[in-house]
Each structure stands twice: as C-alpha cells, then as structure tokens.
Amino acid sequence: MPDPQPPDRLPFSGVKVADFSWVWVGPTTTKYLADHGATVIRVETLSRPDIIRLIGPFKDNVPGPNRSHGFNDFNTSKLGLTLNLRTSEGVEIAKRLLAWADVYIESFTPGTITRLGLGYEVARAINPGIIMVDTSLMGQTGPAAAFAGYGFHAGAVAGFYDIVGWPDLPPDGPWVAYTDAVCPRILASIVMAALDHRRRTGQGQVIDAGQMEMALHFLAPQIADFNASGRLVTRNGNRSDTAAPNGAYPCAGEDQWCTIAVESEDQWAALRRTMGDPPWAGDARFQKLEGRLAHQDEIDGHLAQWTRGKPPGEVMELLQLEGVPAGVVQRSSDLMRDPQLVHRRLFRELEHPELGRAPYTGHMFSIRGYDSGPRFASPSLGEHNEWVLKEILGLTDDEVTEAVIAGALE
Image 1 (cartoon, rainbow, N blue to C red):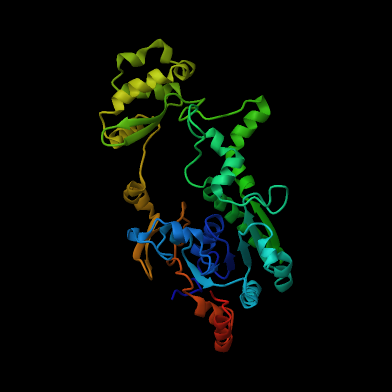
Image 2: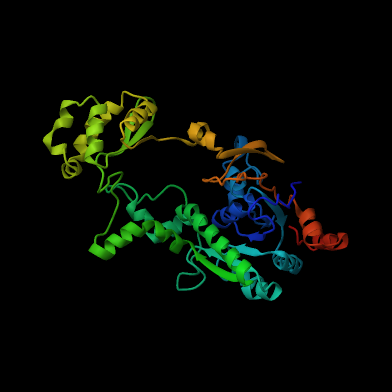
C-alpha cells in the first residue's frame, strides 16, 4: 500500500483531488498532480469500469481490467476507490470525498453529475473552497453541449480531420483521439492556476473545459490564415508551403523511413553536399523555394533513390551533421531504446500488484531539485477501498460494512 502522503519536497504535496473522470483527458490531467505529490483518489465503479481498462493494450496480451497499459499509464500515483453512484449510500460517501477534496474533476456527459446529486452547487455547499472541473467534448452549455463521444469526435468537429491526410483520400485525421491527447496539457495548467488563485484568495472555482475549444489552440495558424486571407487549408499529405523537399523518405530495411525538411536555401545546399551534389540537384528549377515547391514530386523521387540505400539512422546523422532537419521515424519499441529518452529517464519501471514490474511514462520535462516521475503504479479496481474509506474519510468498520451490504462499493 503506497503512502498517500508524498514527501514534502514535491510541489503538490498536501493537495487533495477527487478524480471522478474517466478515459483520457481527466485522468491525464490529474496524473500531473498525482505524480508531483498530490493525493489523488481515482473513483470508479465495478458495474461500468473505465473503457480504457477494457481496450488495452494488455500486458502479455492477456485481457483484464487491471492489465490495460493505457489505463495504467494515465493513472500512476493515484489511490483507487470503487463507488456505485446509483445508490444513495454511494452518493453519501462521494459527498464525504468532496468535503475532503481541494479539487473535484468529472467528465460525464453534461448534466449527468448534477442528476446524480453531485453537481457544483452541492459540492460548493459541502466545501465552499472547492475547485470543480467539468471536462466534456463541447462544454457544459450551448446547443452542442449534449454531444457525447471521444477525442476522435471532438477532433473532427474542431477541423483537424479535414486538414490531415492526402488530397486524393478521405479525411484521415491525426493519430489517436487527438483532443484527448492535447487537452490535458492545457487543463492541468488551468487547475494549477485555480489552486494558486485559491491559495491567494481562499476562493474556489468551477471550470467548464470544452475539449474542442481547448484543442483549437493548435489550429491557430490555419484559423489566422482564413481570417486574414480567406484561404481554406485542406489535406496536403506531408507537403508544406514553406519547406521543400518535406516528407518521409524510404530507407534500407522493411518499412523504415526518415523525415527530411528543407526550410532554407542554405539547407538545400547542405542537402546537395551530403548527397554528393548529384547532377539532378543542380537543376536551375530547384535552386529557389518557389521552384522546389512547384516540382516536389520530381525532387521526392530523386531524394528517395538516395535514402533507399541507407539505414534511417545513417540518413538522419549525415543530414543533421550538415544542419539539415531530419529524423528517424520511430516505433514505440524504438522509443523505449532511444538514447535521449533513456538519458532523460522518461520511462520508469514500477511494481504493479497484478503485472509486476512494467514501464510507465513520466513527464516531458524535468524540474531541478526533485524527481518528477511517477511515484507508484496505478490502482487495481477497488485496490485502496478500505484505506480511503477508513484512513482518509474516517468511516468506521460498521459504516464500511453497511456500505458493502448496500452495494455502494460496487
């Protein structure tokens, strides 16, 4: 059983979080707080486990609600509590949790948490200084508020899918549920700002975080372009308006690639030198960006002939030494061995009660003076029920027994 009180040197030591969210955005947001010292209680239900627990990837390809590495990666350093909010007893325990918490986060379809009797007005009456976070696809208000789904849907509505892919193919979109991946980085900062505001003023907050709106930040160049020029950006594969050649090029080996981007005339000259200045590269049409943009297919064909005979790592190193932006296209298995990530200790091995030792993702930054990695593995379903109920919420043995009989912990 991990100690729920982290070392004092961690920045969020003493911060208490009731995490009623699920899937990706909410859990990843609270992971920032948990890994950096907060006591986070992850509330779930046995009757409807978090969908991420059920879709994997699973350790050793053996399915099980505690074996999903996706769930485990998003929920490190948290305590696990199962509550059935369809029972009055479960709701009463949830209210005790809200009285304890500094931050209360949920990601149900808008209106659901209020119908369960745990909306902001109830939470504020119990705990006037509480910071409540509602995160949903489209926000809590407006004509699209009831639209439920996942980051794939918010990404499509926001416009990402129309600009990612190839012009002769249907919309493809960025990999994974895009808004789920980017929004926690913004939402975690918002929660930190709310905690700082409460520290200075004593005032709580209610934060309505619409994932589509948060993700629009990453379409700022396209939106600004349209507002300024009326130009509609659409799918153009790996092409760029400001770099040519620009793309992923085949290398020696099975399905091996290296990306290359030439952003200036100096970089074009450096690329030519690296290739041994072949005759085709001296074509007058290719000497300026405008000409290279107009003849990208021809350039790509020649460049691919040069890259195809070399391992991707060699292509990257040769070009980087000459100042040409280039990078190996890596798989997840490559990332585990990447010397830079190994040096930065991005992946940490932790002991899980069912899986044993397994790697978990840390954070994309380091802060001088303390280790910002995960403190302990994610909870199995209901793993810390007794500890949370008795030691944190102060229930007696009889009250815990009554909750079990009432089905409040299912």
